[in-house]
Length: 163
Image (spheres, helix red, strand yellow):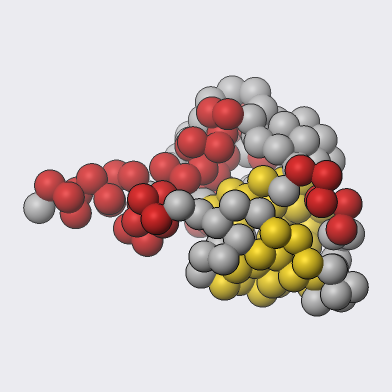
């Protein structure tokens, strides 16, 4: 998968309560959750996001409570990929299970700034900063994980396998 969009920088230790505050957990509707994505970080944050933009985060993105609503809200905001220095372990797994691509790039995260235009190639493990020309390499999404993503998440993947 290739995605081209604007980088939206967030800091270190962004927890799931910042991604989608508890007051919005009364639904699993992707659109409703997406309309409130990052509301715990900044009111109205999602209003500057366009389809296929990318969240770019520091370390430990997705820490805190284990809630599937967090990656669903990111997808609902039209963001198919999060690039981070590092991810919280449970969020990492939940993200893929919900169909959200997560790429960990370590200290190379510093090669991307807020509002840079970036191109993310998940198959080849490459992120191109179209604004600066910088190229970041990371691990490509493994084929078995790509199958889960292609199915739209783990539940749909399991349904396909069982049918």
